[in-house]
Amino acid sequence: MNILKFITAGNVDDGKSTLIGRLLYDSDSIHTDQLGILKNQQDKSENNIDLSLITDGLRAERAQGITIDVAYKYFSTVNRKFIIADAPGHEQYTRNMITGASTSDLIIILIDARKGITAQTKRHASIGSLMGIKKAVIAVNKIDLTGFSESIFNEIRNQFEEMRRELFYDEVFYIPVSALQGDNVVQNSVNTSWYKGQTLIKTLETVEIGSPSENPSRFQVQWIIRPKTEEYHDYRGFAGQVQSGKYTTGDTVKILPSGFETVIEKLEKNQQEIRSAGAGENVVLHLRDAIDISRGDSIVMSGQEPSGKNELKAWICWLDSTPLQQHKTYTLQHRFRNVRVRVTAIDRGWNVNDWKFQDVSEIGMNDIAQISLKSGDLLFTDAFRHNPGTGCAILIDDTNYNTVGALMFLE
Image 1: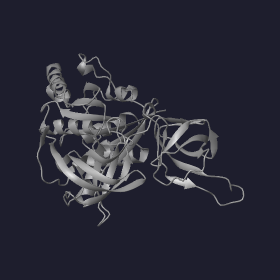
Image 2 (image 1 turned 90 degrees about the vertical axis):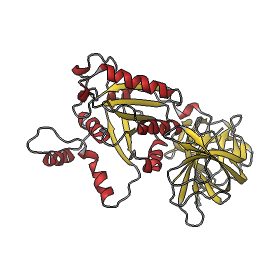
Image 3 (image 1 turned 90 degrees about the horizontal axis):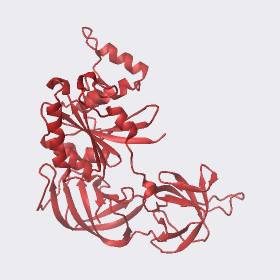
Image 4 (image 1 turned 120 degrees about the horizontal axis):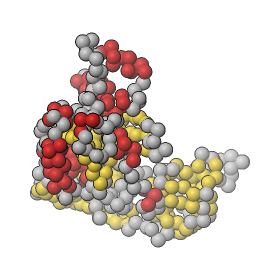
């Protein structure tokens, strides 16, 4: 059963918490004990459970001063498993949304049918697109409060289609829903007979997500395994996760940054020998030749090597309260490989509300910009939009070891 990871985004009071609650409730994904608590908390004069209470615990914790970057919720149907990234949508929490969107396959953007597309809708749509998400669901919520108006739904759809020309989504679904009443969330609504599309849950169950296995083969060494026992005296394996592509016994591979070529002699998974491994699998590679390999080195398919660079351009979302300092040296962590880099230029800032580039001299918390970097060592990366798994990195401040920036490499 495949897994779909998605993030929800919407204006304040657009019904995001209620929609998540409705998905969990109507798909029977709420634990019995949690359901009992919800029933006890509901107003005794009403019959309906307040579904937003399922995620309201997050708000209560924030009110107590507890920082929650992104909350993840899990549920499944007979057809698919799901992971929901629930991140705050306020502009001051842009970094939180980027954290959730960075691992998502799809974004659900809620739009209040009465308010239509707003500046925050535009911002959420642009951030999702920037983070490489290719699939979007536009859930026109509270459609019941417009009398289930087909014309209002069509108007919002047409407006978003105009916006879509500036974005990189390759598939967008439009669904009229009432999260509170359940219309078109899990069950088709008799109130929207004019809508001929699928329900939200059916869309999530059937949407096709591109597989990282289709990208060039990428594997970065996390651990070098050399047991010092008599039984395993000849054992030398390189453990890590296949980031993209596929590896098969007998493949000719190249080690980066050294450039040495060798052949995969054996693959192991869960201490069992396997013939091949694809994206997302944690495996141990055994190579034919005894090559000096370190943690953070890459093992790529010969003929599919990324180009090595020591000057790079990247999108950056700044995560720290201390602004980015131009010409300062930071540590760039590309999964398990760390190199020292210097920020040589802030090329231009990005106004996510107006979708305009602008000249900026400083990058502060939650700001998004394009920057130039220079490293003394070669970095082997892909463009984020083509291979997100190997096209991203983080910046670390050496003075306090804070993670200060999220990077997405450009072409």
